[in-house]
Amino acid sequence: YAPNSATTICRYICSIMYTASMSAVHQQIGEWVGVAPAQTEQELLQIIERRLPALSQAESVYDSRERALAWLRRPHPQLGQRPPAELLKTDAGSRIVEELLIQIDEGFFA
Image (cartoon, rainbow, N blue to C red; front, side, top):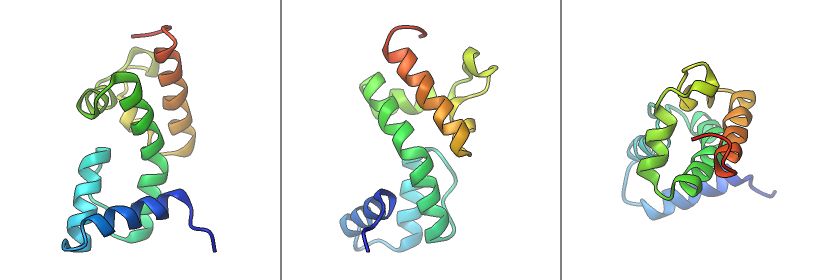
C-alpha cells in the first residue's frame, strides 16, 4: 500500500503534533488551509487534497503564507468577484484557482 500525498501529509503533521488530540490537529490544519475544522479523518484528507496544492502554489507566488491566505480570501475579478478559497470546494474549482495562480505568476493578472 502506497499512501497518497494527503495521507502522508496528515500523518506527518500528526507526528509533529503527537501530543495534541486529533481535534486539535484538525483545527490547526483547518486554520492553515482556511476552512472550518474537519470532523473526520476522511474529510480532513479531502480538504488537504483539494486545498494544499493551491495553498502551496499561492505561497510560492506571494512569498508568504499570510499573503497567500489573504489572496485566497479576497474576491478576485477573474473569478466573478468570488474569493479563490470558495472555488477550492471542488476539484474543478481547485484547477481554476491553480490556473489563475499560474497566470498571476507569469504576469497576466495581479
